[in-house]
Length: 456
Image 1: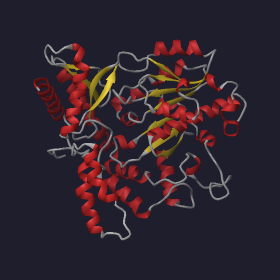
Image 2: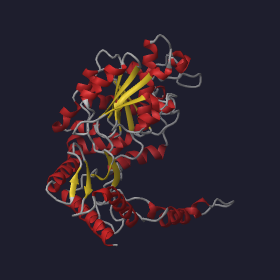
Image 3: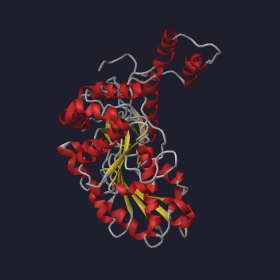
């Protein structure tokens, strides 16, 4: 990794729009590829974020590993679709076997199966649809035929999750036609995980008045990387007859590490699991999967046709397991990177940033001008810069201003979030090349910005 003078241009939206406008100047005659290439490199690329820079600590993005790039280039070269057997027997079979291999790798049941998705958001949406469909079956009707009108009172349908759950759960209930009122959020404990006591009380309070069709567990929250206790939540939900979904888009990769396996205990008992390999495996976006505990569960999303994906075909058709009728062969980059690095190499890659963040938290523990907001479970640490004798009532604004100045300067990148209503600076380590020394340099840079803001 090379430290650049800037991670990205830092330009305002108006300047970015002006720079790339010539690319959108569609004319009757085209331009040579050489000229087009130069235009892209000079006008667009400077406004990209360089994810491989050591100062990038904000989101789940990374440049592709070499083997992953090889897989992606091959998939692009042949432009293989993977909707059904006819369009690419090789691509379809690779995807099917890849899903099965990861089910085994993560210790999922023999009947478990997976499908590739465009993103974790779409995976969560499908999971909640499958959950609602099963609840409809329990109520005696087919959701695909009657829709929400089949329920006696759709307004009583609810999903229970923690307040730290990803916003894609909100997307999911809206797309299902249920609305925000159908989400019941539970508080979190001191480790930012779903509060088991509050969850139990919530279930007891609503199970006789509402229909809980899904409970969403988060294994790696977006803000702090906290992992809800999977097996205890499943046990609390026993007797509720509800679908258990684990949104492990960020966290599941770390279940490969022996020292972290216990955090995911019970995940094999969930009905469905979301995972985003593009968050840690160095594979191109998009690369997401949805696993189900029983392959038969995918029947609830299947739509057959006379054109392809016909009923009773004896060949695999991934298009029956997820809505997109056309999508790329993203499995190849995932297969390639793991085959190249091996389990050990990938484990080393996953472990390095977690150790860096843990060490960072230890180093900052006794720093008087740093408030650590949580104990890091994975590769995320949220802090607040608290200068000496700075007015407490202005601390939130200070964090926001630090973030805004950081974005404008474009030299380093963290994100700004909220914990219990307080503004925080969120530091994420994703690359295996990120060390604690690099993270400490970022902390010092944040301190410098704070000092300059106070002196201005």
